[in-house]
Image (cartoon, rainbow, N blue to C red; front, side, top):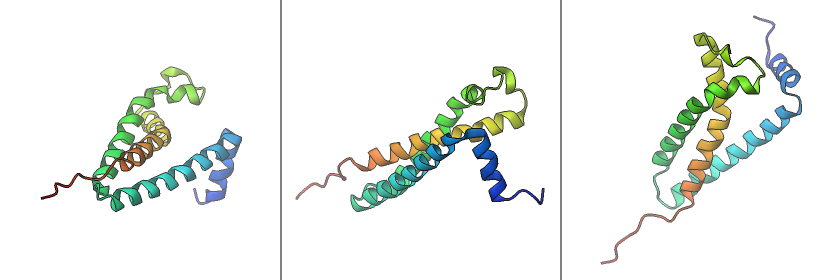
Length: 121
């Protein structure tokens, strides 16, 4: 295990995914930018950034749980390949990527709404 480095993991991912890895990296960068922008908008509009972040994380986890049974289709593995807990956990980890993108979009679009209404006396 001592010969496993970051570079070997990147090269293994490149061999498995090819140019899809570049697309995933670009989507991850855009997701980080949307997350930063959404939290900035929420703080500026006093919407409760923590609440939006918590709801985005919940959307991410629930979406990943829904997508998990469909992960073997991406990896071209047999559908019955999820018969051990390690397989299910690794499929869940793979499903976290599209789930995280949906969670970030939830947070970003939630931060675009108008701020809390104030009652003028």
